[in-house]
Image (cartoon, rainbow over all chains, first blue to last red; front, side, top):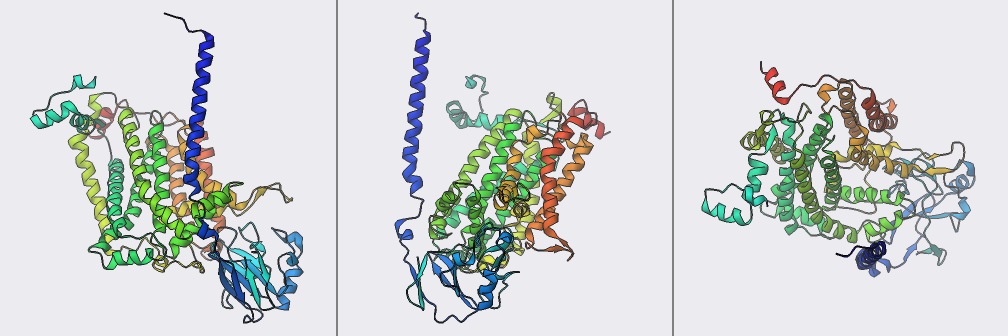
Length: 177
Length: 428
């Protein structure tokens, strides 16, 4: 019977660890395409941009359109609403953004209509709906209040309503996306 | 080999099979003569009842899957078709729908039994942890199942819960996209949820097998919480507990049938009979009743955690809520190490008993808070959010402060010498 030398034990440990390590690499490599198939598919990603005619929206009213399956709020703001949004003391905001960074033209606010807390659609687009304590939007799920610039003012949401990429094609048409 | 100790069966067919694959010997050992403490009360029925519910859910679920279509355009209508056109479809669906609730009722009572009589303590820690794992898997399965009918609550419940994952730093958004397969809860989400809803019950079944295996290694706990010391403390499982379990099961099924036939929608939410609409959120989103206490704990965290009077935030309110909600269940995994008191049963721990019963009331109250709107007030005066926060604080304190403290300081009452003595003394 031969005695096992310390060298042999080290060699065996090395081989076992290497084999195990490559085994794990192999499993990850095999799992990657399976998991990746769960990411958005090409047709989902290819969802076209949305063009909206805004000439029919009177001041003080809004319209909700669909972009990539999500609601987008387009709001024709009144001069009072614009002033309110611009005059806010930044120190009072949870997510500090000045109004002019959130709009391309002050009278039009475009924002994704999804509460940044847990994804509900806030109310306030219709005249009859609750607009919260700051005259913008109110999320009924967990009580987040947004102002006329779509900024979070009160409640559990951590961020302002997101502004999607958009441009004015003409004075009456905007393209979102 | 174990086969050597096998007692031959009289029936030649049984004997022929058993000598090749000893399933009859196994059943005889584990469910026939299996020594079981003779002092069980009716709380010990709920393991068997939960098993019955799991099988009921799998059987009705497989039949429902044959009629259901996992597509956002068709799902809602296919469920309505099951209700109106499929032969007996309404019955199968109501059994499945209410079955989820009654499965949770059985499991909640089963968990309470484990906590009250200290069934989680040594040597049953792994048995207990497998049980917690089953509960987590059940929650996942139930949540995903509720999405399938594609009503308003399906869609918005799924939206709120999948958005919880975005609170996780760095990887959260990626996980959420993987769950969705798009930019919101939509058709890719529904199809993958259906696949998982079909898979997970079988995973649960596998973990239940391990749970029962572990149980048959350590043997059952009992209302006195003391170990069995010999044959005088036990009864064979059959016929004593097969009959007792069957009786309890029949009473349970009677109440279950009452709901199925006379109030099938009492435990559901009417908004889920409105087809899903991604443009309109229901005024008041509530989860199914069995999630309400955890939902209340999620909503209780309305404040950021950071350095006071500065803008530095370590954990924002959203992440804090998610941590508390998941943490409230993950705490159960370490329960055997939070409560290290040598006495198992609450019968002999008067202080522990009081705090545990308060916890039960606290948990039910959290359920009530979870059911109300975010800005609701109790009796029109006290904002419910503060009461929810207090109840959440008690829940966390029970596990993290009270149990470790009691473990060191509670005296406890004197334990009986054996199950047999205690049973005989009671019957004098």
